[in-house]
Picture 1: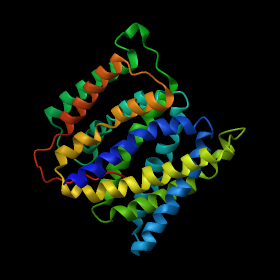
Picture 2: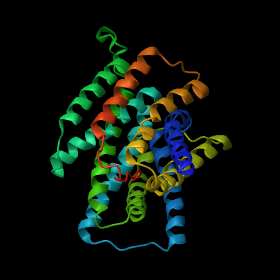
Picture 3: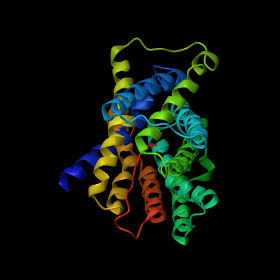
Picture 4: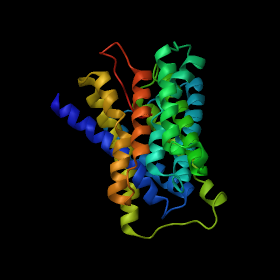
Length: 296
């Protein structure tokens, strides 16, 4: 049990750190190019894992169409908007906004999957909105200035929620590794022309450290961490794993302080408590044996 919690906590630290690493990378690579290169290495890693497990499966036309949508919206647009947003958005604020994804997912599941919408979810949503107010407006509406990067982060959050819904639909018939592999292949193929059409001039770092960070985060954040989480989540209670996963914004705060010398403000702490509390309230599950899986 201790070993499982150790690995799950490590995954949360990796995912929380990704906001700061992404902030560093967008200073050296243009967003669409960064997205394309990152997806290339994610796909290579997943192909390697699938080859090792001998897990390449055919899908029917209906599922293929859903995979196309998942790859375009849930993978390509999700990652591209994330890096575009981080060009100007604060990584801690971005992490807190993305922490509300489970709430939006719940509303989408209510609309499209006919899942139940609870009073607890509505109350949790109100708490999360209050938290976002503290973080973005610093507790004062007169000081409210929404960075355009945060709007891109909101798009990232929306596409992430869509990705979860589409994955939930596909997972009834297809295993998670196949879904992840095929959707990332689609995302990568779609991303190829964008660096040459959206951005001029293209910024491409020649620094070995930048490339090491890019490749390392691509493989570790979207590859290894997801596999480790999905393996170890089977051995702990879902409610406790949920608490761990909601620590990502706090990890982003600490990593921002260490790597970017960004101070942690009182408003960020207050806002993060409201947001995380709201998400926990909205996603609380009475069934302790429910399994949570991360990644697409």
